[in-house]
Image 1: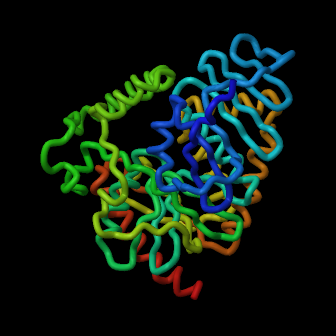
Image 2: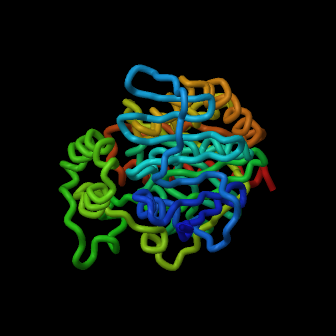
Length: 363
């Protein structure tokens, strides 16, 4: 008896790799939302396949009760997730939401195609890309809003991006997470009848609680979808809603990388850094800003030699080294006592002082 093939959701990541998601899989709804900017009707052989049908693992090795593994696959037992590396193709199987599994695999797959994933706000300015890697809560989303009010700026993403070895920054305009403290900066997103959000003073406490329960909630897609839609911590909006009437830039040559961090000083300061310093920060910041299970995916793949540590980080380092060659790198430190509004004001001011000279040197 023949069966009808399941329709797939297809995504093209800047022409470098493709992702195919089984439309009937529990992961489909979340991945359709989070990868929407890469959606395509074209069907090509997939570099990353996502579904809920695990593959046999005969004679698998065991790492206590946590992992089962072969030379090409790892099963994360408690989370019921299996990751398979089959030559240049990756396959991810599981009955829950799988974004936290897809992200580290997407990074590794893109590195093999000459582009590393970074955690950064990314903007285009006068035709050039500016990367602002930073930890969460630093003020990236607020800074993006203020830059978009100025001439010459366009949006590329506020969380993730890809930096190619030819120094092209490839944007990732995924949905933005708008929180209570963004009300003054994105007032149009709070107009009319909206999902209630907690007061700004409680958002950090709710955020910590969300982080604790997240690994358990994502195992149950319907519950995860409900909690995401009705979480009082944030609203999810796309770039078109956040910046109505403004274009999104998908790629541009990198002009500069400015790492932004909060610090215990009383006054913002900016200092020039080496490219090696920026590479280390970009790699470390991306890894630590991934969800907890994403980090465990990387650790599990490394511990079983499916993707050894040396291969994972060294290959990414080479890609970022080529990308940053000849590009200025800076560290911008902003007082931890500043609100997101105050921090973004200082960040914008420093960018406006720094970038004209940087661009003039590259013309």
